[in-house]
Length: 52
Image (tube, rainbow, N blue to C red; front, side):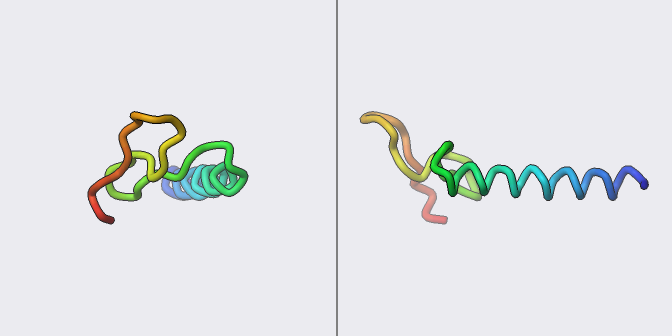
């Protein structure tokens, strides 16, 4: 396997793991554009306002 294939497979696995953690409510969902959380877990936490 070449480096590109390994890198693509690693990205796919990491993306799937992140989605499973969000679905299991272990980590909060985050904005695809800015990476900020979409929901607050505590009062005063910043949330995404970019509208994406």
